[in-house]
Image (cartoon, rainbow, N blue to C red; front, side, top):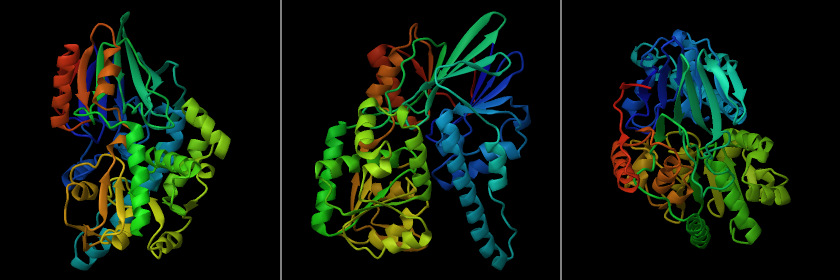
Length: 467
């Protein structure tokens, strides 16, 4: 029998990581994610891995977001020498995401060491660097959807479309042991069926054990069209107020959804702003990858973008302006009204959005739109929770801009979608809820019992189960 250890994203949203060990000695790491949010959670990224990285045969990734892939360079730097399996699009996306993450680690360490030197304190090292990242990227092995592939002796993987972001996958692992096959299915991050661009998540019907994400296990998302209309009205109100619109956004996934909707507004005559700034070099590179894989888009959305943008979101939205340099980014702050500014990071923990906060957050005529979940402990969550002032770039700034939260833009499945997805499995597999805050897991656990009469387990960190 195989052994599964729950290592990360257990009763919390980030840091996805699970270790699968077969009786024959194969060891496969499912995900290698970075913990994000509160300082103590991020500090956990610096702790030694709870296993010997050199003993791992292979890593399997569901998708490219850093909370699923962000510690891969550190894993390689710690001795891992096996392959990293993911879909073709994920293999491309992790290159830009991990290199950007390495740059941030190096920059933050350099900045901190300057003041440490003045205080006579020892230097700190980055979590990992560009060299570590390039070594990790050399270990990528892309796999197509729907085809089984042996990733370690006795363990094979099949990827199925998860509909979350480009290349995202539901991971089906088969463990073959003495003529017995056991099947573990990990949902990855399941997509919201109301989201644009992505196809709907694949339904599976066979599994012995299912790990299911529960980020939004406590609620359903609003109707997509209602959310779209709300965004359109916010843009109209910002135009009337004479201010700018700030949208913190993840470079991969969320930004592409926003560009799609803004393009729709433009073609429908509902976009009053004359300029849309995408102030994120990483998002621009992600757009190029999305354009190359536009054949994986939802059929109806693909047809629209093909007709009006030749399959490229950048051409789909004519008012879009890409900032090519830091000087271009700083120049945006001379614009006091009429601009939509999309910039990272999605939870406002850094990136260029905080510089735009400095120039716009204190202005009552401006609008701030959060198009998705803000993790506890982040600057974005503090603003959503109503903080009258926040600390931005070492300054205390008043929150006077009108703040909007649009949950309907989430790329995650809502409660009913999660229950619908898992209900397609025959013979009620052993179910474990992961990748969610504990109180939301408990709500989903109750709904699963009420609607399906299924018992769902909430594992503890480090818990082990036999498959």
